[in-house]
Image (cartoon, rainbow, N blue to C red; front, side):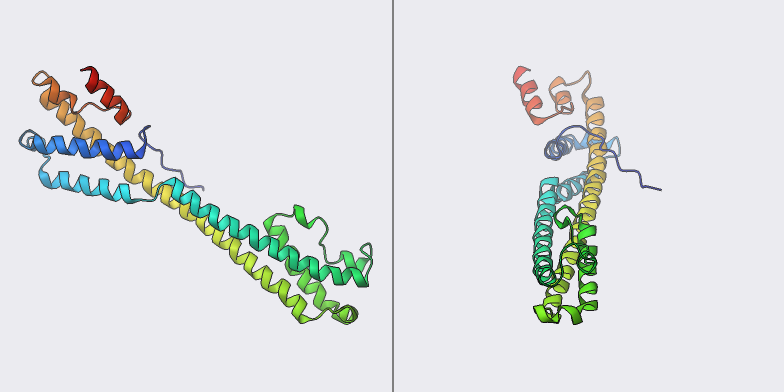
Length: 228
């Protein structure tokens, strides 16, 4: 059964959550006496602040996508190197056999440019196997273990590149889930601090009450202050 993904509980940027939470912590420290009546002391505020800092240091999706793009480019390069090695070997096969013969078609390299990663990898392994089976027939056109070895080496590098790319995909999924999980925790703590602050200053101090009002972004918060 597929694991259910964690849903992000807030709809504004992580950077805004980080800054707004730190600002509310600052106000809560200012109002530490009143917050103490709700069981929120300086130690708990420090714990929330530490979580905010940990959250801010997590790689964002741009970084993760960038890493993924780098390994994907390397995989594409490895794929092209494998195709080049296969074409070089197949040129020798074509010198010996017509490309419509069974011996040629046995290599299975038709439409190689349209193959998926899995198909290309399988093609490379098949070319290696079939070339070794036909070494006695292909020796006169220069086919030898060195030629086959180039395909084998390129095949292994391509397979490694595929695994690295898949690992990066999984790493990104895990990192995004971890970021959402910590972000949701901080958001819950942020909302709780804001609710306490509003409860403290409702009907008492409208300016301090405003300090604990949640806005969708810092820009909206600045507008509200400017208009107040």
